[in-house]
Length: 216
View 1: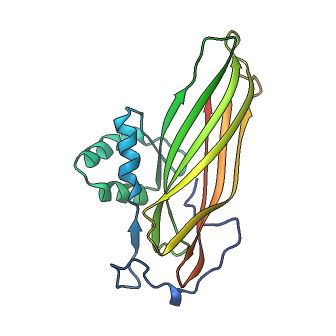
View 2 (view 1 turned 90 degrees about the vertical axis):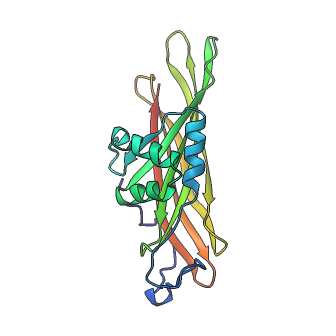
View 3 (view 1 turned 45 degrees about the vertical axis):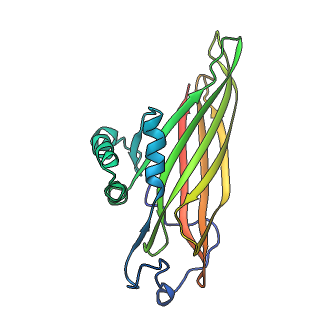
C-alpha cells in the first residue's frame, strides 16, 4: 500500500501560506511536526502481553526480521523517536494479533482480533500523527470439518497525542469478512479516511487507512 495521502472523501485544500505551525513549540513555518506519542503505548501492550509484533511496509512486504531487534532495543532504551523515524523513513506499519475463543463444541465461535499502528500525515507532509486501528474479526466454524459458516468484522479507531489544536476523526469506514471459496479461510477488511479539523485552518485530510488479514 502506497503512502496514504490521498483522501477519498471531501476535504478543504489549504494554501501553503496558511500552513503555519500548530505545535506551540514550533516557530518555523517550514518545520515538520511529528506528534506520534502512541508508539510507546502500542509497543508496551504488545511486549507486555507477549504478543508477536509484525512489521510490514506499505507494499505488504514482511520486514519483521529486518527491524524487530532494532525496535525492541530502542523500546527498551526508551527511544521512541528512533522507532518513529524508522516507521516514517521506511513507510512501515505495525500490528499484533489477539486470537481467542476456541471452545470444544460442534460449532465454535472464534474471535480473531488485530491491532494496527499507522503514522499518517497531511497533504503537505507537515504534520505526522499516529492512529491505532482495532479490528475485531469473528467467525463460526464446524469443529469436525473446519468449514466456516459465517464471518463479520467491526473496527474502532483511536487518535493519541494529536494535540488540542487538532480534532481528528475517521469517515466512510467499511468493514467486512469474506469467506474463501473452500470455506476454510476468512479474510477481514477495514478501510476508512482520516480527517481533522484544525483550529483557525479548517478541515485537513490525513489520507486513508486500509488493512486486511486472513485466518483459518
